[in-house]
Length: 426
Image (cartoon, rainbow, N blue to C red; front, side):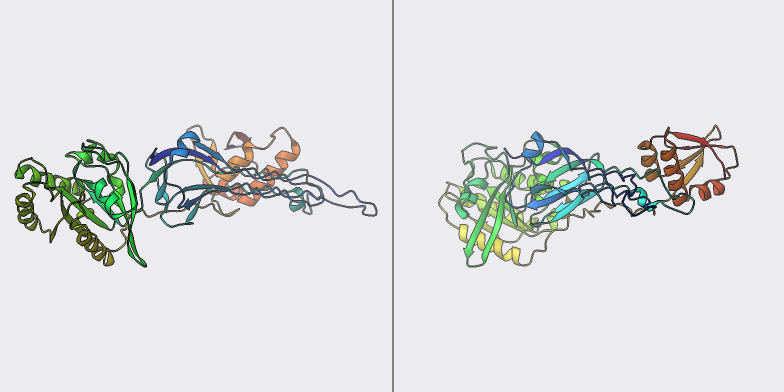
């Protein structure tokens, strides 16, 4: 089954806790603190893999969680860093934050990778907090929480040329004629229900990939028919191969209208697609009356600015070589399409650089805004004297006192950090 969309949840690993420990060695009367640091949590990394063709696995497994970092130990032993969780996706996968958020990556090259969620940093052990005032610190930092995100995965197939046209125009038969692909071929419309890829080989080091896309109908860009789900796959192709059925018994005016419909639907979806090189093929030239309909199509196409129209028969193979060579020539000067996604890889600020912001609510309480401090408060035992000493030290390092002074706080005012409420003492 071909699946080109999926919504998943990812969670990077939490950092390990720092350790509270003291040296107890023979002959060392004043050992001092020796608590080690916690290890870093694992990142969630997406990697493009050409062996994969669909996103179906993500429908059956929608959640991915990396491992937690090891906790610190005594004797200044740090916890282990958790390995990254590597998630493999097909080439051409676009990763964005759910709900129309920013694009994290467009993995269009083999081995391309992006860190979608970063693991939390490990907490520091009490060996880091010894000062002239606190020579035996009884606290350590908790590990930082790993990032958690809800992501949308969207697959756009990678192909050099895309076959477009009305249903039953003969696209699948043409693909099977020019490549080793064997798509379903039948004498009724909508036999192609998912994109099919084939490699066209013209000799040594002369090959390109062609995608057979489901037939488009009028209103496809608005959701009509099958094609609306696959119009996005056209966006990656460098050349469009437009196939028109001139062997049908429909009136010539209907054939010409069908030709216009395809261009209009593609233009409505993305006007930039019409600026790409197009190769027009008139298929089913082996049918009676096809010659006259072909001449009418040539005349009409010239009015629309289209160049040569190639008469072909995908059934007999007549004219197919000329069409393929024309596609190859068009590809030689066609640039790689720019999807304009402006991917912004997720980043995490280094420790200690996050800004502390203070605002005052309607009741006069000063609210301290800083994610790192709020996480620390949430993981600290507020009934422990050692835990409160640890928070006090963290507040001093992060500049909370200075931020409160700038906000106008005075002795005795209420201050809130996360779920911790206390009276301000300068």
